Image (cartoon, rainbow, N blue to C red; front, side, top):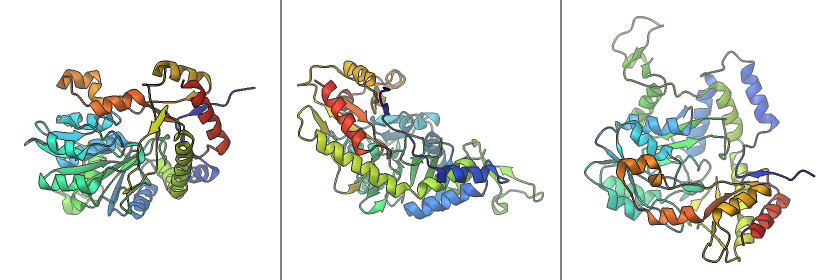
Length: 382
């Protein structure tokens, strides 16, 4: 009998999603057409933000935010070491420098007090990362930003569908812009894809131009006007556009998002119950200001009492059908950043990394699956 295989995350696609994509395939538009604008409108309605710009992926979204804010050589941007590489790399794309503020041990979210300590006269922006789906304490971070005249970009690549103090993440109540990722392992997928939300019209118009080669088609913004065919390139932009095919999938997925979130939260509640009384394991705390969509469920292993090392655990779990992952290797320890800035110490991030594994978390998991996953892990971790 074939052993059942589990990954840490996967997309949830149904016939209704497929049909929406098929309809676009039968339409005049495949690339950027009316479905992109419809998806952006739906994102605004869901998050409560005034404007949304759909883009090719979450990394592109971060890059465009840097460009729209004019971050450049000599500037500094503060972010978390526990994140995907793009949260820091986007800063380097525009020639600015990254400052890593360590995480809170109990949440793995960026420590607001350490943000304050890392601010210098060169600091221009903060990128708090809503790790695993839980929102950072944005009101606290925003107050720090306002006192120091800094921009705030919420990296919500993990957090579509999450809430902070009763508002949807992406409302930009406490930020200039929020970015999302719609990669297949995320709560909502467009295949590859991403988006930026904002309440600032000037930033919105700049983002629209930058995602499409820096081109302007609004006649009120043009230097000249030769006719209906005419357009102008005002600055150096990129091809970071989303397609109508992807947008159609996104619109369909967005209708199911709240259901996806509740299923993920239910799975997490079972994990918490199953591992809660076992001293070999612990997990991150969810703050009372947050309702997390839970892109990830990081399980922490107490290696003070566990004899098996992490490499052996991963190998044995894979042999038993569990294809897990570690989120994340602290970005400040990557060779590129060590070569650039030397040995930056983020003790909480390093301690977290050494202990964490990300368990399977996606809506298709049923109670029997979760029971099997828990049983395998408890047997392997000795």
